[in-house]
Length: 300
Image (cartoon, rainbow, N blue to C red; front, top):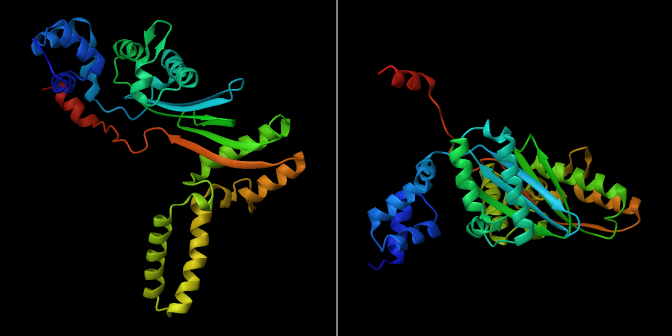
């Protein structure tokens, strides 16, 4: 019996299993949907899939750099509870995923899950961890960069940062300390952009529109309102652009000024090219446990 891509998608939606697993199950079952579900259950895949609907917003953000390849990664793998993040086996799995990103340069999470490490795919390893740990686990996202990089992990995996530099003083021991300061700045101040030039024109236009209305509502004449808006736009830059932000260790200087000072001390040049900042569970629905309801359900 033939089957279509829509059948594969339907099976995936019904079981929560991976697309390739669903395709293989339908092939082995000659297109019979119920038989394919049975095959997936027999392999233990559907058992792991049952957990896939449960909220996973805890877990771990991990970051590392391979100094020889000059490649770095920040990755987030989620679990249902923060307890799992302290599990050494789970931590090792997260690092395996990070190494696969560095070594194999997958295009996206699906490609990472299909990546083979030591004869098993990341997806296979993930299912095994779900079955052993007993929680829903998800490889949520990753970012990969090349060049002169530094990574920083804060709060035991709550925040992960990677910063990319263009510099001729990367081998200077003082550079490592400076770079860590910048990574900590990103973790603490949570900038959105690296420089003013990185802010999209439509974002600035919208901000100016909002600030102009605010100024006019304060009863300011148009010429004064325009000057006020420019001043407030500069303040906006200092909030959202990394190099414009006040340096966290010395609020009297900007990150750009701190960078310039350190580059001069080291006798070279340093440019902050970009950064990535992941915060565990950001943007995800959080699990809300109601202890009273849980107890009530147990005594029914």
